[in-house]
Length: 184
Image (cartoon, rainbow, N blue to C red; front, side, top):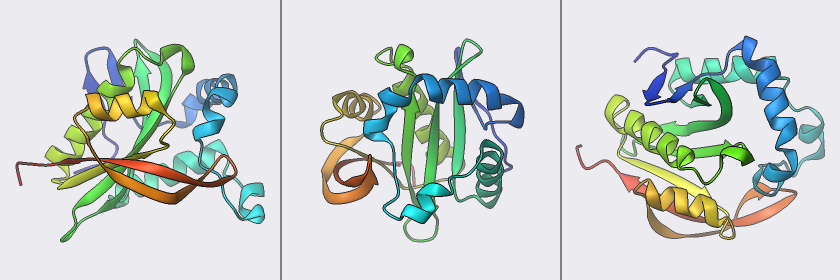
């Protein structure tokens, strides 16, 4: 498989961020700051928090990770407009052959089925192109909208991971949903 890859499903296009997407991405993130803060990963180490990557560093990192086959990050475009981001990350091959999906969506495009469509398409990519066996989605128990996304995309509840990720300034419990590739 050669990176970069674009995935298209109707008016929904998933493709890696480009340097020229900077303005649209920064504006969308600024517009959605309060909407996303309760769900955003943070770092417990103060020095790391002060040295967040620039947009250009983030794009370069995602490009390297995609080429290495470790993580595949896509901007979510709907009808030609940037509306979010989704990543198939933590890709592991060998005996495990698994990964996890993380995503965020513009508040004005939430609850329209677009995130579910993006999750389905990224899972299809993981199963068909990468031949993964298992993909997980970990989300905060109180995030009902994200839980609906996982369920509508065909993921099944697996369990609770206590204090799993550092989110919004603290170690937060997550519930995990899983989908397995029945073709391998």
